Length: 102
Length: 250
Image (tube, rainbow over all chains, first blue to last red; front, side, top):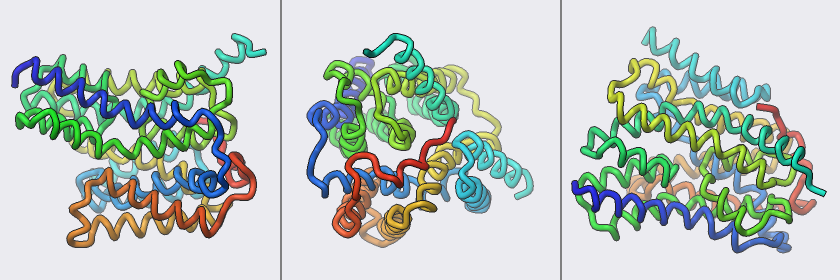
C-alpha cells in the first residue's frame, strides 16, 4: 500500500469516527424536556451494554467453554456488586485457569 | 466559584475510573498493532491510526479495507456505519453534562467517547464535568496507543492462553456496570433482558445475521429503549432513583 493512500484513509476514518461522537453532545447543549426522550436516554446505557456483551462475550476467548466459565464468574461477581476491577480480574483469572485444563 | 482544587480532584477521580479501561485496552490494542503490521501496514501508520481513531471494530475493519486497497468512499461508509452507535452514547451523555461545560470542551473530550468510557461515565451519579471527562479518557487513550505500539513493534504474540483470557476483560466490565442496577429496578432488568434476547435473535437468525455488529447494537437500542420509554417512562428527570445505587469506586 502507498503511504499517502494509507494516511489519507486513516484521516478519513478519523473524521467519520469523530463526527458521531462530537455532533450530538455539541448540538444538544440544553436538557431535552420531552419525557419520552429523557426516558429513552435513561435506558440507553443498559440496552447498549447488553447488546454489546450478549452474545459476543461467548466469542471473546476463542473457546466457548472458557468463555462460558468467565461469563458465569463475571455475572456472579457483578450480582454481588463487586467493582469493575474485581469483576474483570475474576473473569480473566477464571478463563486463564480453565484454559490450562481444557 | 469553580476552584482549581475541585477541578484537580475531578480530574483525578476521572483518571482513576479510567484505569481499568486502560488496562483492558492493552491486549486489544496490542492485537490491533500485530494485525495491522501483519496486513502490511507500517508500525507508525498503525500508531497513527490508533491515536486518531481510538476505536476497535472500526480500526480492524478499516485496516483490512486499506490492506485490500478499497476506495475512500467504501472505507468512510464502513467506518461510519460501525461507529454510528457513538451518536446514541454522545446524545445520552449530553443530558448528563453540567451546564457550564463549554463548546470547546465538548469538542475536545467527545473524541474520547468509546463503548467503555461511555459505560463508566453513564454509571456516575453526579453531573459530568470537563475535568472528570478529561481524566476519564486520558488513561484509555494512553493505553490504546501504547498497546498498539507494542503490538506493532514487538510483533510477537503474548502466550495464547493469556491473550485469550484477556479477551474477556472488557465484557466483564460491562457486566459489572449493567447487572447491579437490574437488582434495584425491574424496568432496567426488563430492558437488559429484552436487549439480550433481541441481540441473540439478530445474531443467530438467518438473513438477519447479515446485519453488522454495529448496526445490531443500534437496532436493539432503538427498539428496546423506545418500548421502555413508552411503557415505563421515568418519574424524575435526568437523575432517577434507580441510578443512585450505581456509584461504585474503581
